[in-house]
Length: 157
Image 1: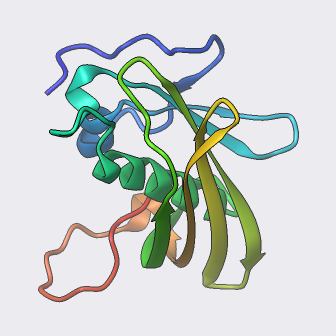
Image 2: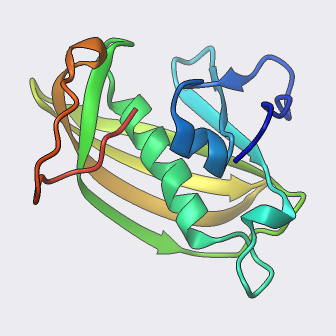
């Protein structure tokens, strides 16, 4: 576990959800809302993010992508979404010290569903592409903390 938050790798960025222990211990992923209305996430990778092969762990990229997709799905900042379907392809590797960036694109939003595609990259090199279907489950503060076995979907941002 991280004892104190790392500074943002780019000025003007902040941790998107400072109370999410998994995302903050995994990353932390820093975020900024861009002028065009899109969400941009960044992570300065470290050795601890690497797998046994010396490349950034694919699970870390999937975590970053899931966060990006959930945030991109939102119509309002306090909307809560869960992941219904997530498809991904690993295209290239990242290494410790790289500045990994993620952006999502809202393809369509209905009353309860959002269709998103995303890209994770280092500079011009695409590392990972993905698409997701997200389900709106209400407002973030209204979610109940209940445990159910076999419940579909991971909790998004």
